[in-house]
Image 1 (cartoon, one colour):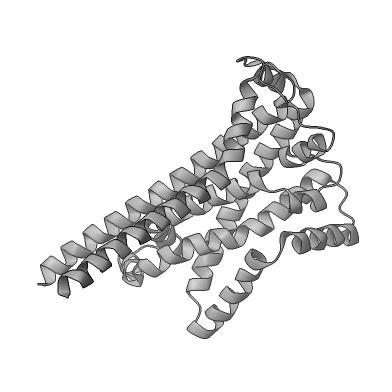
Image 2 (cartoon, helix red, strand yellow):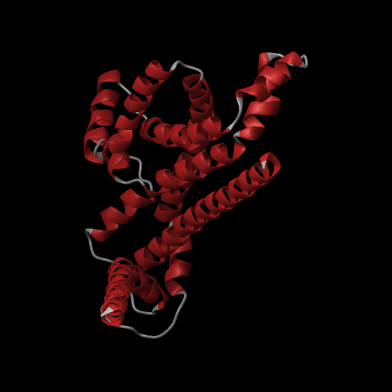
Length: 283
C-alpha cells in the first residue's frame, strides 16, 4: 500500500515537472520567437521580410546612413541620458527625505508616488499633452524631456528606498559625532552606502526612457525618438532597415536589464554571506 502511494506520488511529480517545463518552453517561444525572426531577417539582402535572399549587412549599413534615423537616435539617447541623470539625482534626495519622515506620512507619500507607476501610459501621455498645451510649452524636445523625468522618478525612488531601509541610521549619526557636517555625512557615508540602489535606479530610468513610446508620442510636439520613428515607418510597411534598428534596440535594452539583474543577484548573495557571518559571530 505504501509503495503504491509512493509510486503514484512519484508519477504525479513527473507529470507536474513535465507540464511546468512545457509551459515554460511554450511561454518563451511565444515571447521570443517574433524577436528572433525579426533579428534573423535583419541580415537578409531583401528589403522586405517576404523572402530570404542571402546573408547581408546592408540593412545595418543603410541604417547608419539614414539621417532621419540618426536624428531620432540622437534624440532618444540624449533624452534617456539627461532624464536618467536628473531623475536619479532628484529621486535619490527625495528618497532620503522620504525615509526621514515619520511612518504614517511616509506611507501616504509612498502610495502617492506609486500612482504614476500603475497609471496607464495612455492617461499619463494625454495628461502631459494637455498640461504642456495649457502652460504654452512649444519645444517638443523640452516637453519630452520633462515627461521622461517625471515618469522615471518613481522608479528611481523605489530603487533607492530598499537600500535606505537596509542601511543603519547609526552610521550617519556616528559621522556627525566625528565632526562631519550634515552635507559631508550625506556625501561620505549615506550616498556610498546606498550607491547600488542609485546605480540600479539610473539604469532602470535609462532603459525605460529608451523604450518609451506612448508618453513620448503624446508629450512631444514635432520631435521623434526611435520608438515614434519605428511606429511611423511601420505604418508604411516594414523594411529590413527597421528590423536592424529594432534588433539594436532589443540588444541594448536586454544588456541593460541583464546588468541590473546580475547586480541584484550579487547584492543578494553578498547580503546572505554577511547575514551568515553575523549569525556565526552571535552564536
